[in-house]
Amino acid sequence: MSEETNPFESLQSQIDDAAAYLDVGDDVIERLKHPERVLETNLTIERDDGDLERFKAFRSQFNGDRGPYKGGIRYHPGVSRDEVKALSGWMTYKTAIVDIPLGGGKGGIIIDPADYSESELERLTRSFAKELRPMVGEDRDVPAPDVNTGQREMNWIKDTYETLENTSEPGVVTGKALDSGGSEGRVDATGRSTVIAAREAFDYLDKDIEGATVAVQGYGNAGWIAARLIDEMGATVVAASDSSGGIYNPDGFDPVAAKDHKNETGSVVGFEGSEEEITNEDVLTLDVDLLIPAALENAVDADLAEDVEADVISEAANGPLTPAADEVLEAKDVFVIPDILANAGGVTVSYFEWVQNRQRFYWSEQRVNEELEGVIVDAFDALIEAYEEHDLENPRTAAYVVAIQRVADAFEEAGSWP
Ligand code: GLU
Image (tube, rainbow, N blue to C red; front, side, top):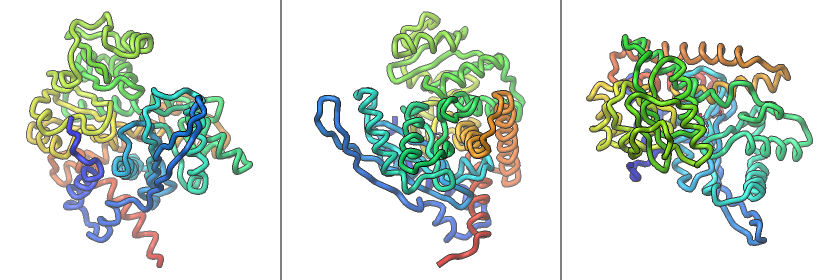
């Protein structure tokens, strides 16, 4: 784990890598390296015992050139201003590479939600929603779930906003429960795009996904769904981990049974289908065909990258490889499907949810999955076109070349404003 790598600096260096191949002025690139604005706020709520506690929270609106700011809200002790800025930038280029008419934003609260009751979390979420109210809205900024937030928090945000605005506007937030205006297929969407992108990469590299071995670091929503779906495609999941440790079985195990074990005990560790208990680091360095990092930023630094033995990496997490790790992996010819494409299924189905909310017309799960498939395959093809056209070594740079060009075009087409 590299604690030192600042994710905002990682984002900026990824933009610089791509800028060299773009016909976009340095002044525009400079604009595209910084958020338009960042809200920093202090939320004070009453604990169940009557004491007050203050929490710092952020919302970064990175870029709105292509549409309303879009991105999740995370609850985590590691949240910081720079992390939120980086994540909001990654959202900007994520919505651009998959070509949906949205910008990029991200929010976070510095908290370990495991230490708080449901009613405390509800008060905190509603307090944040009250702070966000002037800056969000279905045509302004549309939050969504991220690390440690889900349907429950989104339903609270929607209810707070609609109550204060005296309106019905379910599209103010996505990732809601189905009965509150959520979309079919949203929960699975991040893991689904991770495996669609992996399947396309295997195809491009002339490799067989059937029988491929897979290691999944992080067994939250993105990781475990990716494990389930890749298993359904005929690959063999041999390893998985969460914050308590990892499991390994060279013959593979049932990813659904591993998830059931985690639901019962809080961790994949101790799962009966595992042959051997291994560390998180071991999971990242196993000799597998496909590695899916699905936890947090900076999971793989340059040192660890030296030991990575996977042929393909599909980034379900945001920012799991440091730029220095990227360089090492590029030299080792590891094909990295970048986060902004691999995990873009989440925001793509958020976009479908927003469309459905606005039309008050809801789609079947089959339609959602088919539309998602088309979006991810098209984005992968656009990445490969840039990769080949510029003779690039790193697919991440190719993704940024496509995405930055799209944002820059929208900015320049809008003309200048004092
Ligand atoms: N938090 C997810 C991401 O990082 C989803 C964002 C959204 O649906 O707006 O892509």
